[in-house]
Image (cartoon, rainbow, N blue to C red; front, side, top):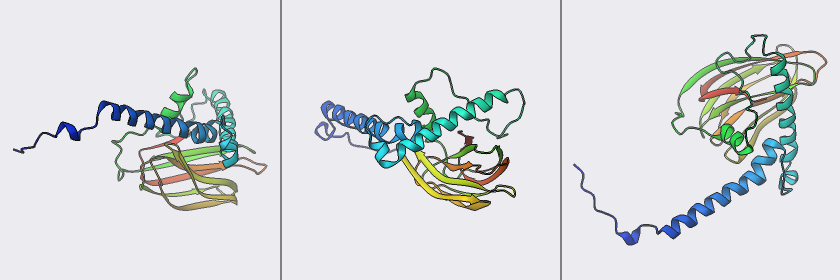
Length: 220
């Protein structure tokens, strides 16, 4: 049995201090949302900071690609073809608010173990000019072995991560036929790859992953 001494009331934070801390946290989160998340993920830049940092352009590209991917999904929904057998591509919910979309994308359960190992293989066919993005849900410090190939062709790629108001670019390349290595998450969030086919023919990209991540998803 453990005996513990009750804390001195004077050592506990007052209600005013708790309210002040809560307000500061909410303001900080709102600032990150407006200056980083909204520009980089949705192309919305009310402050102009996103344009200066180059985040707005990235968000506009992602939004456009997401709209194109949704049109492709609707056109092929009766084909019965799954791009990721172990995890279907998420379907955007009509009428959802911006906050709900951010929560769905960046919310990560604390119960995910950093050393939970899983394996996946994904193949995506890109038409000329088309782009696609696949993300792994990872905790900070988690590592995943990966390899991808354009199966005899070439693509442009960007290995990057985002989540919790943070974003990072690990590696970029143009006209690459393949890539492999170890992806280590710099923070809790979504980490993965964006490919674009700049050739005049369809290109199939095959990605193989093996490591500590809780989910794999095609986000556009």
